[in-house]
Image 1 (cartoon, rainbow, N blue to C red):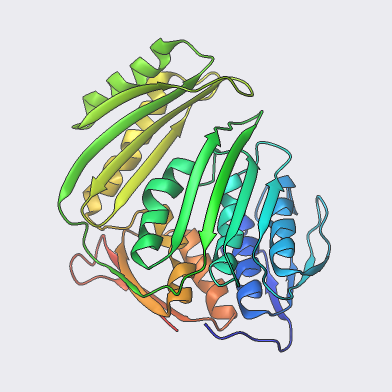
Image 2: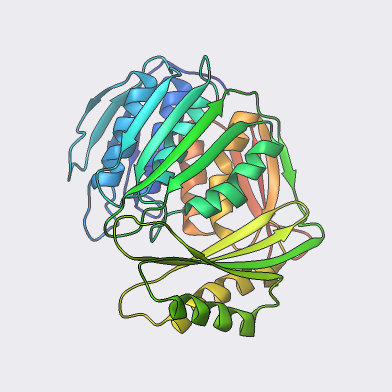
Length: 346
């Protein structure tokens, strides 16, 4: 994509979904275009507006990777000026300082590191499984394989899992710059099965077994497994459902919470996966908005997804505001009521 060094781009963080995604996408594009960014009304659509700890971690990580100067980088700030410099490769240690999502920090800086002048090693500490954020399982099994199809060389290792509220996760990522090629993802291809895995730490095994039993009653599982996590920061529970197809995988994660039954956790996760299976489109709700920036880097592409989420619409609007690409979202001819085609033209 073209780089720009002209007047700063100004964005209103209250637009669209009004959350942290506007910040992260804007930071990524500002680095890619080497263009100053002014953002106001940050996270205006949230109960606690402004930068929280994990959003501040994204800002600081972006500043480190792009040698940027920043004003407004503090907890609670609702306005930010971000002036990127030269993107650099190297060894980066990013500590969220809480159970905040390591995966959101990774997705903020990954586009820039894919065009850096050399290979990079990133160590992230914080949460690997968070509400309202992609899990490390999703990134490893759904997101990174699509980047690999486009030519990216990204290797991620989860050294320690981290859950709310204690965090304590540790992830290492190796990134080798590569020129991405356009992706055309219109069909799922042949089914390879549905797998269910429960992650447990410092909790009774019957919790995981009940989650697996409930899931097996609602989905035709190919395999089921109970995995005990090594000692870490506090108890943890997650149900990971993976539907694998020839061209794509969808990963749904149900997180255990105090006061929420194992059966409820499993039913919520299976309902979400069944919704994905029903519409027949290859790209799930969360992957749909996360593929947009890689397609911008690749020079274009298209994919078919289910009904567009507000996150997808918001991400597309930010990309258009930067002039980085044309993004079209329209009903797909294969099933105009349930499937939509997303096209990116640079």
